[in-house]
Image (cartoon, rainbow, N blue to C red; front, side, top):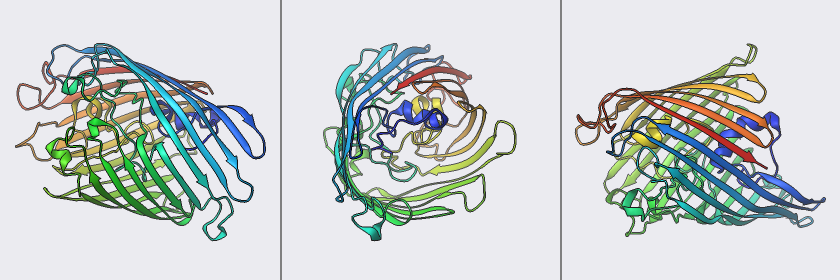
Length: 442
């Protein structure tokens, strides 16, 4: 989806709205020119959000009220090369900012303003040049772009987007911390073989320019088999290095680290069902770490509003490095809990998480949902006790093709506060978190 140049119709907009808000998976384009062989698009996406948290998690009393926004703009297109496939590419800038108090974890202070290049890549798809590999069975691209593996459990994009808060502003990436204005890796090379069905795979190399990620470089590959019941896949990633100036002792372990995972996703041949899992192993100098999840869901398609219920359990060992996981398919993946994942923690390390999701679709362009999370800190002796419960209530409303509105309320109840082993300031009472995000795609 990272290279799509087609704007989704309204009927699909709800399913894509959270990806639009993160701007990492969908290209929003206005067609400037098109014929049988050539397409040129003007890309435009604006996202703005109002956020309020009655509690803070950075040691400061009171709450925080702030605003975030970004505009992504530029060009994308493709050119058919006769029987020799298709050349495609994009060039986009992002202008972002944060206003007000800054976020509840102190990652931003409200003074961030930055314009930078986001996407700048070229690619080639093979068309029918290699019949044994299928249509577009070879897809090679390089440059500044997003790379996502599977569901994004290990590798989704190059977040986070910190501001002036940490390290006296040395990690500032332009703010817009929650709505995550920037996702592309600075330098990449990606080769996909075999299309989307049957046996297919990929090989990649990437280099981050995100100081919060220690400017990590990685290489790896995937091998997948996709059939009617779903996809089963293997992933391997090798850490090639970090920039010592920005790397913590924990991030230094990425240099030479090997990561292996087995994953699966599909309906298992059961209509209206969905299943997913991944088991991952990190081999690094400090020792082996493991993380895994298992998820099952079912949509009651014959009932009014087509309710869907999902249960997932995920577990991350004490020294697990969450790498570049992120917001892949909507609220709750892989930022689990809007308060917990963005401000309070845990941040997908040293925790076990029970999650129950429920959503209904009363209108084609309106989805209502509820997400419940139960966080359990695995080893409490050497770390913050981040045991907590969180309930998030949200709506996704595609008003038109060019306007998506998503309000959300989060109720976060930690077991501990900053006075007795936790990090919520002002007691362990329920924090009421609210936000309204508006996306304008073209």
